Length: 486
Image (cartoon, rainbow, N blue to C red; front, side):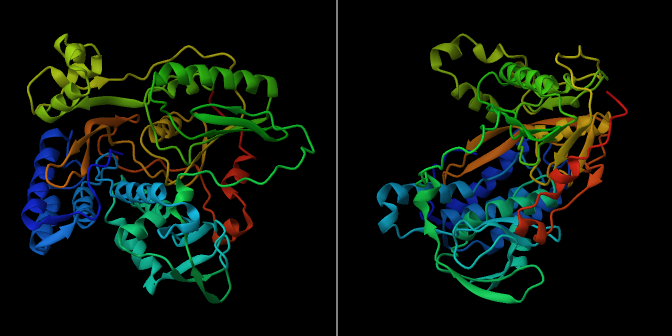
C-alpha cells in the first residue's frame, strides 16, 4: 500500500473531489493493463455518475477515499485499489506518538474477526475484550446489523473475488469501523454457537498497542526441548507431530533479491525435511498475499519432476504515467545513464508506443532439474480466501499439473489476473491510487477462466471449530493421500 499524503480529516471542496475522480478515470485508462477485462466500461461509468450526482459541497478526505475506493473496486482487480485503511493507520500512529496508553483517548475495536463456514463475522480471538469469546458470531455493532455492514462494505474494497473481499473486511474490521466513524465504546450483540444472544460493551484498546509491543509475562522454565523450527523471511517450518511436517508459507517477497533469497531458504528447508523424514509435508498458503511470481518455482523443484509453469504469459502496459513513476524512483545522475532500460521487464515499459501493450512474454511448460533434497511423499497445500496474487499462481500450478492435494477453501485471488501495481498520488486530495500495469494468463492457458483455484478437498472452519481453537483444514491435511504424480 502506498504512503499517506492525505490528512484524513482535511476538508475538500466538491470541485477538488470531482477533479480527483476524473484523474482516477484517466489514470486507470492510461496505465492499467486492461481495465475492462472483467467488467465493461459501462459499470465504471455508472459508478462515476453516481459519485458525481451524490457529491456534497464539501467532504473529508476519508469520505472521498471511500467513494473513490468503491469506484475502483468496480474493476474487480485486487491489484488496483485506493487503500483507505492507510489513512486510519496513519491517524492512529500520530495518536500513539502523542499520548501513552494510560491516557490514550483513541481506542480501537479489540477482537480479531474472521469468517465462519456460513460467511458470518465471527470472533477469531477476543484480544482481552471482556465478555467476548472465540467463535462468537457478531450480530450488531452500535445498533447496526453486522451482516449488512459486511455486505455493504465488501463493495467498497478491491479484490479478485467476492470471497477475497469479504475476507479482507473481516481481517481489517477494526479499521473498517474507524473509516465509517463507528467508535468506542462498542455496544455489540454476540451469540456463541447454538446459544442465546447476549449484549456486551467493548471499551476498545488504546491504538498504541498496534505499534508498540505488549508487555510479556516472564516465561516459565522450559519443560521440554524447544521446537526445532526453521524461521525465514518467507516461511516457518517445523514438525507439528510425529511424521507431519508443516511449512507456514506466508509471503513470496522480501524487498531485495527475492528469487535468490527464496531459493536459498527453500534449499535449507528441504535439508531439514530430509533429516526429519516426515510421512507427509503440508504447505500452508492460506495467509499468503503473494510477491514475486517466478520465485516459487524453486519450491516446486523440490517436490516434482513433472514439467510445469506458474503463468502462461505476462504482458505489461506502456504509459506516460508509468514511465514518469519509474524515472522518479531513480536518482537523477543514474537516470541520465539510462538504467531504467537495464531490466528486461523495465525495457518493456520504456520501449514501444505509449498506450500500447508490450508483446506477451511467454512462459512455456518446461521440465526443470529436480532440486535436492527431493521430497516424494504425500503433499498437501492449504488454501483459503486470503490466498492472493503470486500465491494463487503457485496454487494454480499445483492444481493444473496435479502436483499435490489442495485442502481448504477456494483462493481469494484468481489466476487470470494482474500484477506490478504502481502508486500514483491524486493531485487534489493526496490519496494514493494503486494501478496494476501487468496482466497474466493462468497456467492452464484458458483466457476465459476467471475462477479462483478450487480445493480438491473442501474444508471450512465452523464457529464451533473457531471456539475450540480447532483447525479442521490442517487436521484434514495430516492424513494427506499419497501422490500419483511426482
